[in-house]
Structure formats: C-alpha cells, structure tokens
Length: 426
Image (cartoon, rainbow, N blue to C red; front, side, top):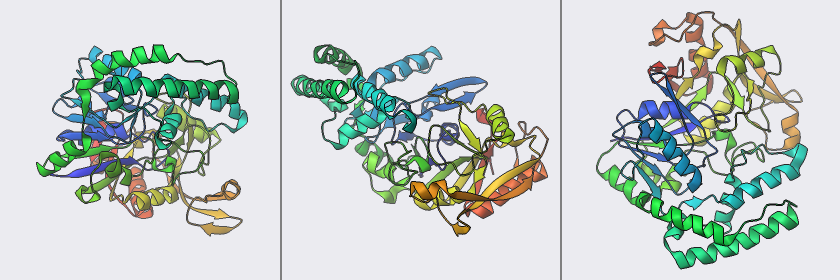
C-alpha cells in the first residue's frame, strides 16, 4: 500500500494530470482534493488528446476509481458536459468509476455572474480569474450559505436555500456590481431537481472510502489542481486561487489523518509559466519568453489565454518543497528547451542589493525584487524519443542535476513530450 500526494510547485499548468495518469497505472483510487473546473489537465495517450477539468486524471485507467473530495467546488452542469465529452471517446464515467463527496459545495449560475461582475469592476486591477465562479462558491462555503451536493436530495431544504441565495445574489449583482444579471429561483430549482436524480448515484462518503482503501492496502493518489504558489494562504496574495493548493489540504479535504501519507510528489516544468496577474520574478519579456510560449504551446487549457513565460525559479521551488513536504520532483516539458543556446536558472532574489530567500509578501517589496541567475549551456538535439536519463544530451543531464542540487529535492522523473510514453522514471 502507498498513499501519494501530487502537487504543482509553480503557478499551475505544470503537467500534474499527465503525471497522475502515469502514476495511476497501478493505482486503485485517485482523489481530487481542491479547486473546480478552473483546472485544466491535458492528457495525450497514443496521440489522442483529452482535456479534463473536474474529473480526476485516473479516469482514463479502466481499473481506477476516482473521487472528488469535499474541498472541491463542483459545477454540476460542467460535470455533466465533461461526462458527455468522455463518453464520446468511449470512457464511461459511471457511479462505480466516479464518486463525489456528499458535502462538496456546488457552483451555481449566480456564482459565475458574480465572478464576471467583479472582474469587470476591477478593470486594470483584475486578479485574472477564469470566470468560473470558483471564488464566490468558496465564499459561500465560508459564509455558511453554500449549497452542497447532499442538499439536492432534500427538496424542501433545497427550495429554501435557493430562494434565499438567489434573492441575495440578485440584489448584490444589481446594487453593488451594477450588472443586468438576474436569476429566477423557480427556474434554478427546477434545473437542480432534474440534476439531483442524475447525481444521486455518484454521492458518497469520501472519508469512509479513503479510510477503507487505506485499511485494505490499496494504492491511493491525491491529485491537486493549480500550483503551490497560487495557494490562498501561502501564494502571491491577492493574485492567487481561492483554495489551499498545498499537500496538507489533501487530508483535510478527504477527511483523513496525515499519518496515512507516504510521499509527496512535486511537479514542475523545466521553465516557468503563469496565467493572469501577479508576481513572476523570472518572467522573460524578450524573444526567449516568446520562444518558450511557442515551443511549449503555452495557452490555457480552460481559457485559451496565452501564458506568461520565463525561466526555472529554484528559489520558488525550494519554497514549494518546504510548504508541501515534497520528497521527490518530476520535471516536465524538458523537450521545450531544445534549441536554446543557454538555459537560465533563477537561484536567489535580492531587494535593493540585499539577498532574500523568499518572495516577499509585501506588494511594494515584490515590485523591487530582482533575480540572481545562473546560466547553463543548452542543447540542440531533439529529445522527444529519449526513454532513459542516459540518452539525454549531456547538457540536459547537467541541467536536471543542477536543479536537483539547488532545489534540495530528488528528481525521480522527467517528461520529453505530451504522450503517456514520454514520461520517464529515473
């Protein structure tokens, strides 16, 4: 039996879904523990691309059961769309393949309207959300007015919740945000009642399922979304997501104790990207940044937005290692660096000439942050057919070795392309 947590160590889009898919070859259970359909995990298997947003990456392994834990926010309409898309490629997402925590919070249409209205109001100061209603749904959860999956199965209780929430949200949208969005409680209730019958077979107690799987000695993988540096508590606030993305939250979300965890695997690209606003110390605004975007096809899975691109930030990765208790790293998209004459590693930060060991929390200090770089020679060879570390060009080997030294964490694998077979275990 082993229990692993897979987390992103940068600003998201590191390739977590691809690695989870690889790790779940022998996994019995994959548990998504936070976020919502703002995540985008793209998997390529035998040349066929599959984009997942809510359903855990283990769904493409026929013998693996997938769970959405309580820390996830669930848009039920998006879930059904995703189930239908998977059916088109002959992946049946039946209740024996997918379970959803009874106490998961729902994202409803008014959450999306609030999200869009706030971003429009912020104008130049936008956070850069995906507009999927993630933040407003988490707010309702904390305010104790959210609607959970289990509420769909209690008609009288659901009716009172919907009427109250729709009235409050309509008033907020009109009077505070000044939008023309307005929702009908009766229409929404009708839709939710229809959804209830479809979703009822998927409802489960995730805490009990995970606990029983541990007792039975099964292989369990917890799958995170976004990245460590977007964590609501420890990320580059306020330019963060609305949930805790760090490994410790996997146990909170699933309702189990931390003693069950055997390992934490951190996923990071061989360079850095970020979507939306916020600090990005190693961002490259020149030709190299453009070349990284083009070579890496760096456009959001969910939004299609071009990602900001820059160099590997070992100082940020060290922070992620500390925050998550990471004991091993997997480096993705190493193939994207082929053709660069030099490869840069950000090794430290300075503010006004004084070295600092972390991204500061103060916005003013963040603006004055400078990066200390170490330049390594690049390589020209196409490495997409590499299947062993020893087959890599010498300079690519040296890069991985140096990342391992600077991050103080063992590298256990790397990828040289999007396909499942292009993930190599070291």
